[in-house]
Image (cartoon, rainbow, N blue to C red; front, side):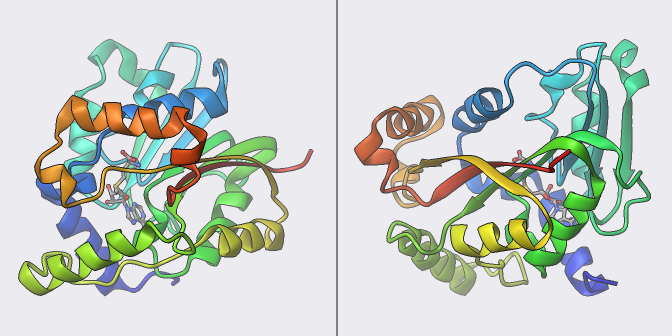
Length: 243
Ligand SMILES: C[S@@+](CC[C@H](N)C(=O)[O-])C[C@H]1O[C@@H](n2cnc3c(N)ncnc32)[C@H](O)[C@@H]1O
């Protein structure tokens, strides 16, 4: 067993409460990066691990793709499924399970999304190993993570410390990672690092003032302005399993 039962339970409990989901982080920037890095996706087997409310992979439910959703949180999976029209559900499978243990085909997927999940697993290298085994040769893995080697990451860390002291809702330490450790995990598990995008999110304190679409705007601005995005610690990367 790679994840302890205690960690799995804590993650599920934390994310079962929707207000804890992404801490109010805007989705717009994520959606545009998924589209930019994956292009149009048809006739593919797609896996979304740690899918949350499924808002990033719902776009693949177009009648041509098969979508598999995996998440520890039953509430998240319920939200994900209820957002898919009943006549579109035949090609969607759901596993309420740990990404290390879900009984899914190895290898079985052309595209895997793992967005905002690595901070919640205990062993990031082992997670990349499992995702690599799940990918079909030639398949793409899209990951999102925070790069702790960036200065802007310090703001998030400081905010997390305050949150932990005041609320301590999560009950576990998030796992810090970086571009360096992920590049090395990718190479340990036979994946090629193809492309990456960096962006700067609205600092947590500023979120109290800048909300919703305004925060989206800020993130788009950061994405489309190279000096601003180069300061960011939020990363998307596309990795590929060689044929
Ligand atoms: C920050 S949310 C991101 C959700 C979604 N990928 C998105 O970006 O909108 C992290 C999700 O990963 C799930 N998760 C965390 N660790 C997991 C694990 N080991 N196995 C399966 N799901 C996990 C959580 O329950 C939560 O729904």
